[in-house]
Length: 148
Ligand code: RB5
Image (cartoon, rainbow, N blue to C red; front, side):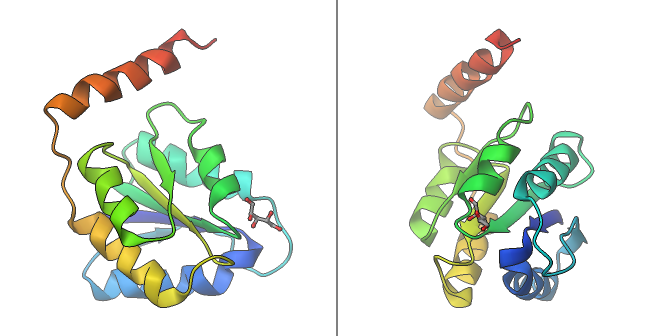
């Protein structure tokens, strides 16, 4: 799978470790930055990865900031993005099975690296179930369409 990854300054080290973990699983990882620990703004990287996912440049995305909240909020502003911030693997798995999330986010200040690895592993292995869930995703897409 081709996976886009992005982060802010708080999450640089975790981003590097997760990118290596994903490469070790056989995935191609495209790093959209940030590349340094200089203070930066998470919306920049949330938007970059979200645009890459929405545009089909990558199959899905992983975003990391201090809490995962800000960077996932930014990503969710891009049409077609379903980004979920989570701190444990169960939510990550169900977010794919039921909500067909295309970006997973978490916080470098909230969870440790081993939990982060479990989250991405469960999320990538999970499959969207469709069926009754599709109607609800269509309803979410309708909300998007109603915005100007
Ligand atoms: C940066 O200080 C911090 O606000 C950011 O990493 C993130 O936690 C925002 O949601």
